[in-house]
Length: 188
Image (cartoon, rainbow, N blue to C red; front, top):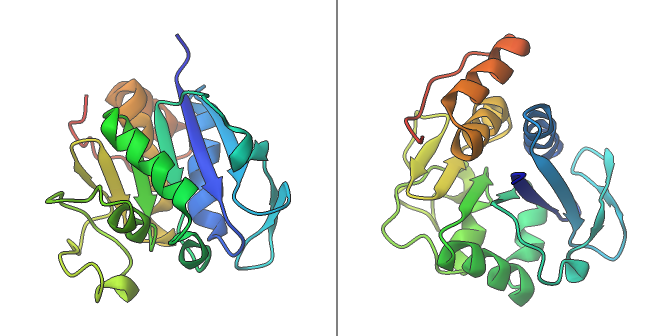
């Protein structure tokens, strides 16, 4: 059975935090669906780089995915009160499926009430709302929640997502192919 991931994009998403995981997941032969949380399939990032989504988030219906990826950036703040996004995150959590959130995106996990006592990291700019950020780590994995602090850790984050879905051997192969360091998280 093919492994699949869903990536949600909102206007003003952080391009590096979206494109790097999409690229790495696809290199690992994981099926990736990019869903727009806007009114258009072409979603503009914070640096005015546009990414073409595969579908609108409302069109997902009952599609099943093994992982959801939530990029950060200013776009996160537009999604915080979106009930559909909260429901999608809650469903992944209830089904014990993988959830990846980078930069400010762990705020969406807070709003969806799925963080609980989980260990996590996030961008330092959101420490007022997420006071228990673990700093100094590129990736924090607790249960099925994988978090990362920002654009500079996007490769480590993407490799951790691969490790979660396919194991550390595949993550190592992808890391080697792009000459990136990879520290096994011990997920598999």
